[in-house]
Image (cartoon, one colour):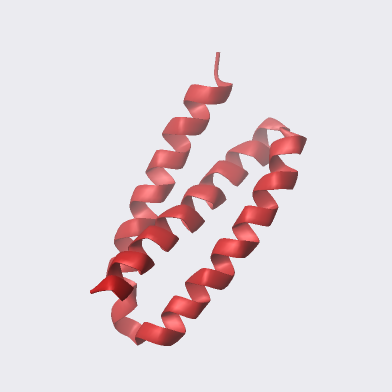
Length: 83
């Protein structure tokens, strides 16, 4: 059960960062692009490690985390950078 909770959390963070990065690139926020890239790399390595450990069943929990992460990233980025 811990594996699935971790996969949801790591996928949430990884997709959150991808969504946030997408908005950074579009908005030309170069400092944010630079630092977000490092975090994205770390969470992608963690995601692959969890997939190797859990197999295809991890897709269910990581899919939930990923979808929630993307929506939250867009909402937070809009709140921070939109005037």
